[in-house]
Amino acid sequence: MDNKHALTDYAADTAVMNTYGRAEIAFVRGDGCWLESETHERYLDCASGIAVNTLGHSHPRLIAALQDQAGKLWHTSNLYRIPGQEAVAKKLASLSGLDQVFFCNSGAEATEAAVKIARRAAYEKGMADRTTILCATGAFHGRTLGMLAATDRPAFRTGFGPMPAGFAHVPFGNMNALRAAMGPHVAAVMIESVQGEGGAKQVPNDYLADARAAADEFGALLIADEVQAGIGRTGHLFSFEQSGIKPDIVALAKGLAGGFPVGAVIASQAVGAAMTPGTHGSTFGGNPLAMAAAAVVLDVLTEDGFMQDVRARAAYLDAALTDLQSVFPSAISEIRGRGFLRGICLAEGVDLMALVAALRDDHLLCVPAAENTLRLLPPLIISRDEIDILIAALHRQLGVA
Ligand SMILES: *Cc1c(COP(=O)(O)O)cnc(C)c1O
Image (cartoon, rainbow, N blue to C red; front, side):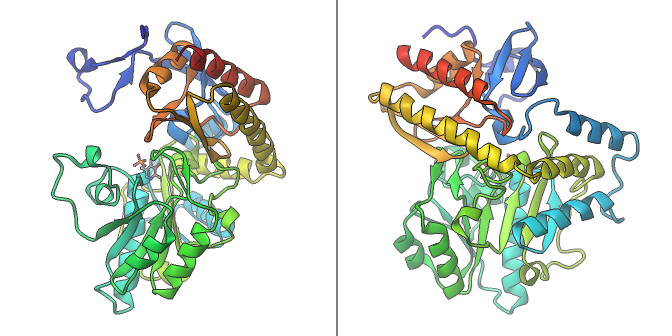
């Protein structure tokens, strides 16, 4: 396939380290679901900076909040009270049904802090041997050394060993396997209810409720990694909501501040109480700029009718994807995910990277994921007309794939 925007090995002509396969496009501005390149071409953004631009680009309320805060105060450190943190923490606690929030700057920091909090909670209860974190195969929890140990993808780990101890993996979605792995050594079970990087893969219907019951039975905690699936992406503020359960610890990042770097860990009172001054920290975590942006995202998502409207538009996308599969039954093996975290699982032999590049050449941005899955992560504000544009591009490019 002749893609004018093929991925390039750009190390030769920039000083930026060669850790990403990047497309030869640079964007100069964004507006809603659209990005404009240096050459003034417009692209429909169904990647959202990998599930980050919750409210699209240049949302007027985000711009106003950041500009206002930028003119007042950027950073003070966590040596002093930060009113913006207290406001966002209060909102996250009440929305999640949990109690306390720790702020950091990224997803890996949030999941890593979640693990630290779970272990410390066991330690404070006199169970210092309860350290193992059970994770699922196919999971992605981040790129720090700790979170690489929680992520079982060999390609991410090669050459970075030794991996920290204290993590084990159970087959994705298999409750019997999870129960069999439980025991007095397990501090927590860490779950993405929809594996994003893993291919927009949803756990089976009762899995979260059963995992909650298993954790309770064996005295372990339940960590929900909502870094990608949280903040409205699955049609609910938190993806665990639909299962009716409450985790002990929730990790958030990507979409929380709509593009400003932030991470957060929410914990129950019982668990969070294990964390006392000096046990954990972050220089930048929860700074006033990040908090100003996060406050707007949470305000917009909790406005009357906003999430209902997201679900209605997600249902419109769902119907179109079902139709797409019926038109291309030999190219599409499965439609996955929910809300605006969707995956088109391609049949063996359909070249995912070539399709992503062809769609990009057709001015549609989406994201590859594991298991030969094309991932769609549009901003939550995508309109029906824009969904039609997305679907038309998929029809065009699957037609020649
Ligand atoms: C992206 C992601 C992370 C890591 O987030 P970073 O901000 O890249 O560190 C962790 N968990 C999940 C589920 C993710 O999708």
